[in-house]
Length: 509
Image (tube, rainbow, N blue to C red; front, side, top):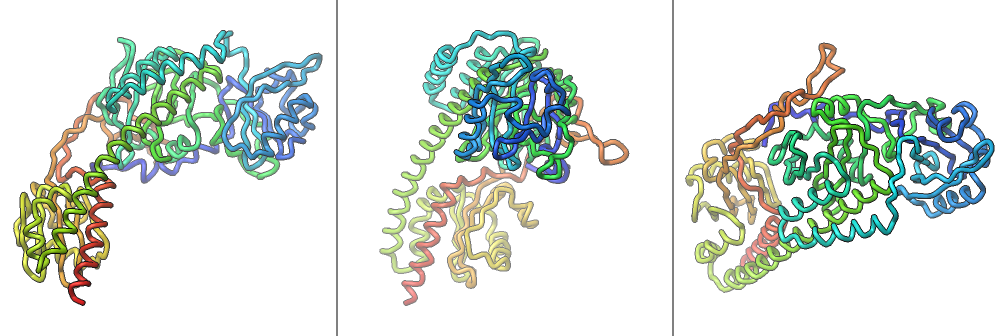
């Protein structure tokens, strides 16, 4: 689909979200050097944990704040090169006692980062590991029973809402342009509904999407928080701001907090859904009042998001396997049929129906030695000649596929009804010999969560901007667009093209 304004590419995608140099106040952040010897930086709310000021602690030996056993734990973790956050119970030295605190620990470029939640924000939950394990195990069974993507997403949002207590839980999937469509939603009656709506890529810009590939979730317990700065302001090792990209406590961009306010959401949590190590979608949780989740509760969301990722991968892989098996059988038949024919055009014409099925096309055209033959729904021969000439001028030696042809080939506007999508196999492109598959225009209506062209509103200085205020349905009719070819289909077409090229050379010899 094409939008008038692509804020994700032109502006939002360049935001340095990792350089906030501040954290949310429900926890304390400590940065130690890579030898676990010296405290490099601390958040200014550290007195709530250690009863000493940030100025007193920064630059001190680690032995002044941690027990010997805790230091040993940290050094083992560093030695193992742990990149992901791991929970560790550390013993902090107070003036007259020690305090055991569950922390998240991970290595960063400058050393070792520790994040500790402040007990003042968290009433006793009483949730043991056994309780969490039983809950996750039960949810896993429910999700794994799902036979379709719709089933899996619906069950996942139901169970996550029940497990976490959020007012609303949604799952949305990204398209090829990173717009996200809500596939499933479970919400309290008073919450605004977004099921079926699509949100523009700029709502979750590229830096944020990249962050989710590395971090399983993002929690904002209270959008009205007051940010806590790090002390000292400048990292003494890097001589710049500390990279907080992987920190759970990392402060949030003002524009996103404004976005939540416009949605009438006070607390939010998002968890990734990965497929083939890429961001497939997100689980989004919203709450109307502040909501603080312990590390244990966050781990429930993380584990369930992993289960959803695995189940979606299983469904999509199974679908891909079935498709590849069918394509393999069809390829074998085509090869046998082509080898036993006297001329290429004869082979094409006798196998046109199977070719159309193999290429998953509504119509095909064979351009061979100045002759053009068609089958099914195709553009006029004159338009095909123009298209073949354009392909030849582009000197394309590899397969070319495009599901929005008029965007790259202006003359394609003449035949959108039959050829908004093409898959072109160059056999002997220097001689104009092509096999071209066509797919028709599919006119669709997209229901956006607010006008995507107004997703970002700039102030007169063109540097400060705000998110849209309205998320009411804004509909867009998409034309000149065909169903894209799947990766498996493109790979099969490439395999057949390679056979045709070699078969043609063999015939010449």
